[in-house]
Amino acid sequence: MLDLDGVVYVGGDAVPGAPEHLGAARVAGQRLAFITNNASRPPSTVADHLTRIGVPAGPEDVVTSAQASARVLAERLTPGAPVVLLGAAGLEEAVRSAGLTPVGVEDEAEALVTGYGPDVLWRDIMRAAVRVRDGLWWVASNTDLSIPTAYGTAPGHGVLVETIQRFSGVAPVVAGKPQRPLLDETVRRVGGERPLMVGDRLDTDIAGGRNADIDTLLVLTGVTGLRELVAARPEERPTYLAPDLAGLLEPHPELVPGTDGDGTGASFEVDGWRADVVRGRVQVDGSGSVADWWRVVAVAGWAHLDATGEPADVTGLEPPRPGAR
Image (cartoon, rainbow, N blue to C red; front, side, top):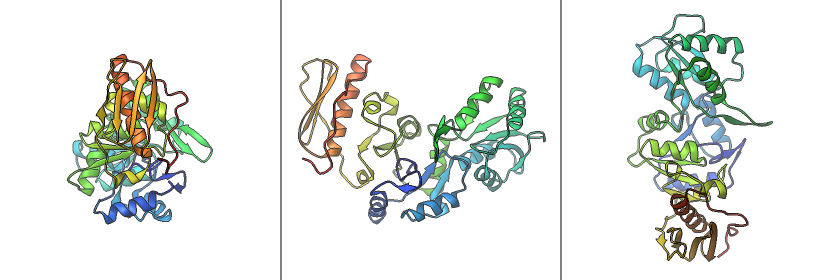
């Protein structure tokens, strides 16, 4: 289960190497599903974009938070039930496909569903907020506070969720990551005996996988850097870690505890690398693969955080260049 932005593409372009790595994963027998918290685009639109950047995909390979939201609604409501919809075309398509009826904010309804939609009107948000305060059941596609745009990072659907929630005092049922519905919907639609969540964000992708009780792979082609990695809380720590999607096809060796002079247990070794946290600062010695460098630093940092409650200092620490030994 592959997150999209920061994993498969950045903006409109493929992450370097992603099409080749995913093609090799398919040849190796892995079934790929592309999942997104963005509820505005129908799966067909997402699939077309993936195909254009060299990652062949059909609508059946894409699962969105809009589809997960529609599933949450359909499991509680009767077929054809009217649902107030604040969002874009992707959310409307998903709600109709689930056998429910989108209606306006003034119409009789059994629920409200919200998702990112750049054309949603403020007057409709106000009316929906009042109806939620007065008891209308509410499902939100996601709580992402920001989204990438052509003009930079902008407010995401989570800002709208916070607005309605603060006014109404009501928390919605959330379908997108890090909650379970989107991942459960993906497994339901795509299948798979050993699902793996692949993402670049600790707080949504990795936490979402852990919430769904599945293994996770963190790739470092998106928003997570060294400081964020060593500061990850236990619920945000991936099962596996790799610089990019080549990690789908590589062994992930077990790390071995080293002898720690500080007594915090923050010392680990793996295939030529050794990382220690000494007086709160990470120190790395040895040589080996770039991927193993990241792995040993991460695990040493987490051990230090667990022992002291403070993230390790990584100032001046630089990963080796790809290809270096």
